[in-house]
Image (cartoon, rainbow, N blue to C red; front, side, top):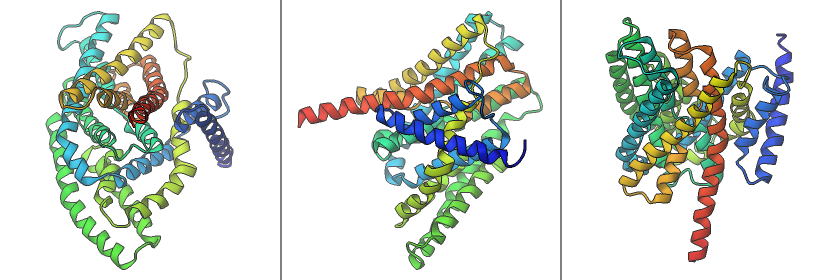
Length: 396
């Protein structure tokens, strides 16, 4: 591919993403839904104008990292600590229920399997894919609705981050049972080590930034250094601890969220995210979609896979939320907010392809899950919040 062809692709992506984002907003749906549909239209699934290249993948990865950094910056640290234990319980349910139901679904289609057989590991791996939560779509929707700093919004973000960490540990254990060269215990130690380093190092970094912020308030050097810190922590998390880079980006934002200039930093960072990297990330989801390998049985499995994956998050996370004394409406919002799948599910599926636990045919089911959950979640969340707003207005 010629280097200048990339410029054509970027022009098409940005124009279509903006146009369909506006259309979605006119239809009372979140803009991210329109951006995902834009990717479907210009990608291999419909028009075939753009293929999902490695360059677009890298830009999309930067987009989701910046988005998670913004979420961390907008966090309320006190509220985050307050909701932490509850978020952990919700995350555990959000992993356990999909893991079990996903394995049972696979066995229902392809037969039960004795412990230790290849079919058993494949069934467990299907459940492992379902455990992943992608908070980025939910975050964009909550930001658009102005609910990201609410108790429900903070709980969803916290639970989704913890969910991904637990999901990565589960993935490593599943691969470890299949591959004797893997060391699941080391992954647990690395995960613990990362959060210890993040807490200790984050305190030092915060003091440095607080001093810079005091000496150079409202200067562009602060957002630039902040973004460099975000990228650095994302790299360290992925490279040295095996933690998803988006987790590192979120932690970087949380470290800086208590700065007096955190809103100024967020505004400057949001310019590049809103104009360029964000639309590319959401459009890339549609670009990855293809239905070439679909047949009757696989189609039926894909439909059931999507329904079970969505329902399992609502049941598991929503039930625990209700036990933790959230209202029924808020419990449903948390369950719906946790049902999106994205980059982590793709990473897990790719690991399955690499280790032989998943064949390329089932990748279609993962893409379909990401697509359906990415479109459905923002719409359902908006309807739930609109219903509550109407009740509040009626009560007033």
